Length: 73
Image (cartoon, rainbow, N blue to C red):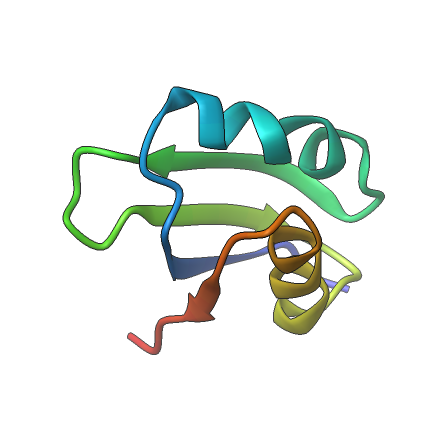
């Protein structure tokens, strides 16, 4: 499978929010790199992933009590 980058609109508003999802994203097989732009009004989460779906990433975020919605370019 090829490595792809998907952007998500989230409600991860601060560093504390990001810390809550950090371990799950860091340890999930298939997530190679990620970051959240909390200065962006849409709190954009960018994920480099291979072998998982955008729905799995959304599930990780939702499991920590936050919202995520895939953005279509």
